[in-house]
Length: 394
Image (cartoon, rainbow, N blue to C red; front, side, top):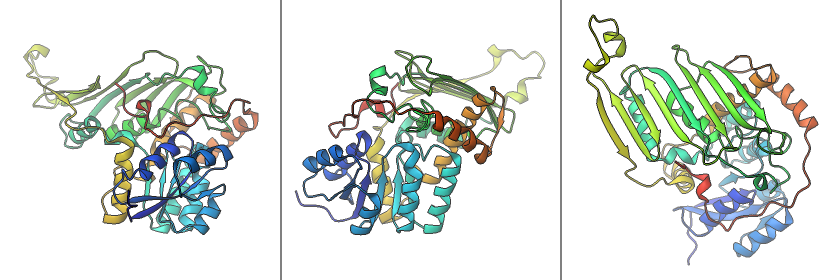
């Protein structure tokens, strides 16, 4: 197979996600993108990568890779707390950046990344692959077009992120404050927190209950309930867990002219002609007399997931296509999760948004100093395929 010429990309971190991205690009599944180099500090992972990606240069230091290789872009797929520092170095080298979710673990780090991206003028993307799901895209379009009016309430129960203890034991960095920077909110739920704000907008205040080690032997949260307030008076709840099986994935968004429910691979839409505020105080009005239009949708095309984000990132650089997942937007889900942690650490009080990044970092540093990296077997890599658990699961 003749190697395609195009965007030359290096990958930093070839554990599970990085190895899957590298395999996808090496197989030339992304039009216009070429795998040019790989970096990982772990010798075993480099050896495995060398065996799978014949002829691709291997590095143990990303700065050396940036200096030695003629790269156009970098994909960052390392543990979360070092996303930001690698991105800053990449932007300084004049590279486009695609970072795995979350952007980092703190709003302060995301702010630095966003500033560096703006100063560099380079394309900055983030792997929010669930934005490629056609049902979420349709829901967003309905909301933006005013099909359900102004937001009244949102409620997302997303508890089908179940993980057994063996998952957490698979890597010493997992589920630690120093190694991962949090639990379900920073690992699994960033996709959902991003979609929540992508659809409903950013709240103005967060109150949260983040239960540490409720279901697992870990030092971070595995069960969370968030209550949100919005500028127009609307409210929202967000419930997530890695300790429930089989779990639920149900999102309901209620507006002044209807509601949307996303569940079991379907989008259900209820609409009425007039705003609820217009008929609420009419004399002799009854719910049975209000005409309601109901429509149901299923996906009309596949969810392109990680490949879709990789292709969109490539097209943005080569052809100026708009980014589906702009890296600068990664700060929004972090703003919510950082606020949730602050709420828990400060006695479950309401935290106004935007948060004070310095205050959050003070609390986080205390947690990290008390954190213990568990001595475990080294995390096993995957076979180069994208796992179903990394995509939308109804």
